Image 1 (cartoon, rainbow, N blue to C red):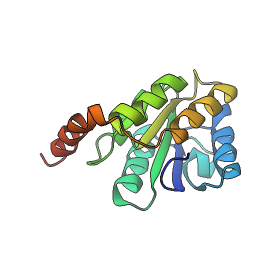
Image 2: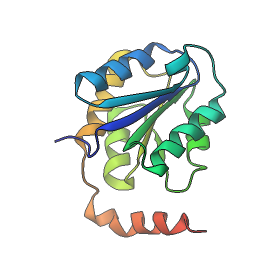
Image 3: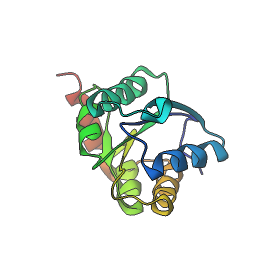
Length: 151
């Protein structure tokens, strides 16, 4: 089982050890990876811009889902969630990543470049991409979230 949608954007504000690991891991599994921010340029980029750009690409449908990375993960998460239709979740462990997909239908995975090791990043990604359906008990809550985007 794999995450629906094979086109993903990966954005980071700096080059952390996990950035290239995440990109390589996804490409090895057949995902088409678009890079933005430092993941593309190799140079430090403002985290608000990176998070927002990841969110815009996801919300526009140009990509199926996204990954955003900054030092703590908090900044890019806040910025991505400014975009209507984005449900960015900061997930620094596989259980949280699985829950974000299963219970929150999250469409942007956010990682901390400081806390997440390359080994842990692979475990988080595997949990994220292998959780393909939302828990039916949360369907009503997901609809409430979607309705909030209209405000």
